[in-house]
Image 1 (cartoon, each protein chain N blue to C red):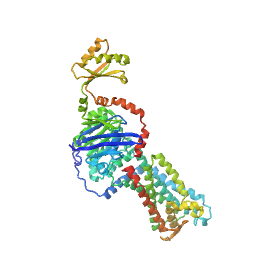
Image 2: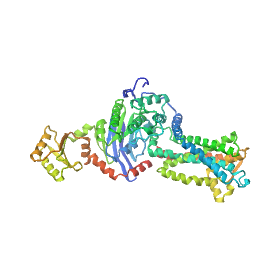
Image 3: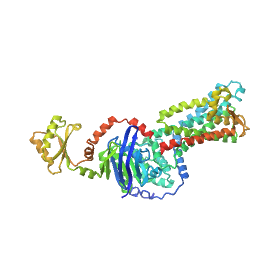
Image 4: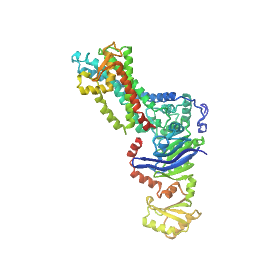
Length: 290
Length: 340
C-alpha cells in the first residue's frame, strides 16, 4: 500500500504490510499508552472533572479543617488543619481510584469495551494500568493543590524526600484501589450496583481510618478496624513526615492494638495491599475479558 | 478452498433460555456468508462466541485456522468485528478513535497513519475525521466503525446486522463497500434479518431459526431446491376469509397449482406455489374471470429466501419477527449476556 496514489478499494491489500515483530512488553506499553491517551483527551474536553476534583478536597481542608480550629493544640500534636492535610490527600486519592471503575462500566454498558475485548491485547491489565496512570496523574494535581493550600494555612512544605514519599504512597494506594474498583466493574451487573458499592464503601472507610482523628480518640473496636484499613497505612506516613521533618524508616508512626507500626512497615503493608489487589482481580479479568 | 470460519455444534444458554442450540456452518476463504434469521434466532450469540466475547457451553470455533477457544488472542488478531450497535466515544474525533484502535492492535505509527488516511479516503470520511464522533450521523458512525474494524487488515470481517437502522442511501454505501472488500480477498461473515440484504450480498447463506442452522447453500441453490414459482394474488384490497377460502378451493383445482396459502396478515391474499410454466399466470386470471372474481393485484415470481424460510420453519420471517418481538425480554437478555 502506498500513501501517494491509491484511493480505491482495489489498493487495499490485506496483510500486505509486513509488521515488525514486537515483544509482549512493547505491545502492553503501546496499548496502555493508547488507552491512557483516551482518558486524558476526555479530561481535556471535559475540564469540569478536573476543576471539581481540585475544588472538592480544598473545600474539605478549608471547611472541615476550620471545624476544629479552636480545639487545644496538644490534642492533635499540631493544629487540626495541619493534622487533616494527610487525611485529605489520601482520601482524595482513594475516592479517585474507587471511582476508576465507573467509566469502564459505562464503556461496558455502551458496548465500547467490546472494542478492547475483541482486540488482541497483550494483557487486559493494560486497562487497569491506563486507569491507574490517569488517576495517579489526576491525584497528583489535586495533591499539589492540597499541599499548596496547606502551606498557605501554615503547614509548611514537605521536603524532596517527603514529596517522594507522598508520590509513592499515592501510587501504591491508587494501584490497589483502582484494581479493586475495576474488579468490581467486571463482577457487578451494572453501574447502579457499582455506584451503590462506592457509596457504601466511601465514607465508612474514611471514618474507620485515621484521616479525621488519631487512633487514641477511638474506642478499641474502631481502633482494630482502623488498623486493618489500608487508608490508615497511607495517611500515617504522610502525616508523620508533615509533622516530623526528621523521619526514618524505623520511626513509629502508628500504635496498632497488636504492635507498633514503623514508617517502613506501613509502606510494606501498602505494597502488599497493591499486589494482593492486582492478583485477586485476575480471575475476574479473565472471566469477564477472556 | 479452505474454510476461514468454522462453527461446529455450538451451544450456548443464558440461564434457562437457550440462545444457540446446535449451530454448525463453515465460511470459505474470500466469500461473503450471510447468517439469516429473525431477531432472537441466535445470530448475535453465535457471533459473540466467534469474537471471543462470550464463552460457549460447547462446540468448536475456528477463525482463519486458529481455534478461538484454545488461542483466543491469536484468533482476535485475525478477525475484525463490527457490532450491531455502533459504540463510539463521542468525545473523541474519528481520527483519535482510529489511533486508539491502532494502539490496541499494536500497529506501528507510520503504518497506522497510512491506513487511516486510506480508509478515511475510500469511506468518504475525510471531511469528518477530525470532528468529534458525537456529531456523526448514523451512516457516518457506521463507516467509521468499518474503518476501525478493518484497520488491522483482518482476514475475516464479522459484521452483526451491518445496516440495521440505516437509511437506504447509507445501506447501499455499506453494501457496495462490502462487495468491493470481498474482491480484495477478505472473508466476510454477516448476520442479518433483512432478506434483501442477504440476497444482494451473500455468496452463501445459512438460515438460522431457534438456535439451529436449518439450511445452508447459495441463495440460488436454496431457492431452486424449493422448485416451482410463486403467484401472489389479491382479489380485493381486503378480501373476506370466506371469499379467500372459496378462491383457494377454486384455484387448487388447476393442475399446475401445488399449494395455496392464505396470508391473513396481507388482507387475505393468496400465495400459490405452481409448477414453472409460461402461462400459469394467464390461466389463473382466466379461472378467476370465469368464476366472476375480480383481481386487485397479481404477480408471479421465483421463490425468495423468505419462501425458503417458510418452507423450512412453517412461518415467514416477518411472522417469526412478530412472534419473538412479543416474547423476548431484551433487558434480561442483555444483563445475562454481560454476565457471561
